[in-house]
Length: 245
Image (cartoon, rainbow, N blue to C red; front, side, top):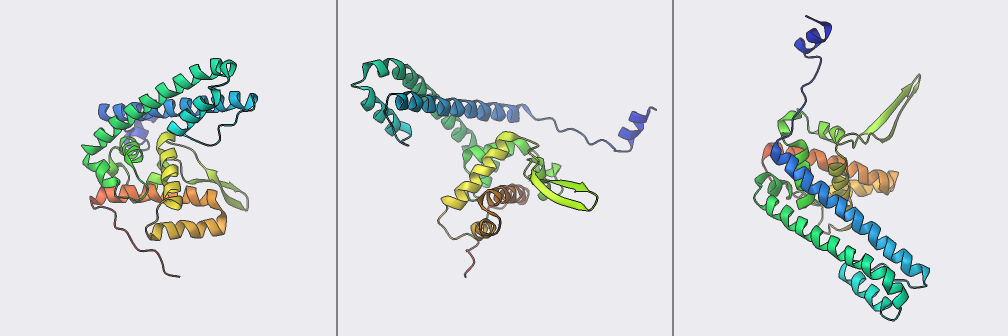
């Protein structure tokens, strides 16, 4: 037996998880949506840039308000409208297709018991639940919930040399989309969740100690751990009251 064969025999190499067709379909759906969202953002920025060139400022409006405001601004500027209207038409098409993808995601999540279970966790919506499930797929792959954070690239790199031993930026390994959505879920908890929540208090304490950036990453990592724990237990997330000062 070759040296490589002996290594496999003694378990030196870990088996590689092969995703199912269903997981690939979910990943493709989420990836296509993310691409269109990026295109929509770049296109709206392009429209703003063109308008700014001609002294027109549409402000920070989004969605239909952005559409209506731009139309009102170019109504009496035919030369500008000649450039902006085709861009705006494409922006509308992107917006409509993103809405179609969102409906598809909602329908898929509605019939997936695991996604519905994970959505009991604060900050977790249909997109982040589907991304997490399609990325992990089998929770028994991880003996410890803490390992999921490392799998998603949410743990800091360690730098060791001589007497130096420090933590750096997150590793950035693993699935980019799932990591991004965990990060967005953390932002939702920090800024939108109004219900008293111990998890939010924990993150706000990190904000005071280390700044908002590190707090968001730490909260995203903790969310991945909680999601895996909820998934394995099969029990919905239990809201704990915020700590009393």
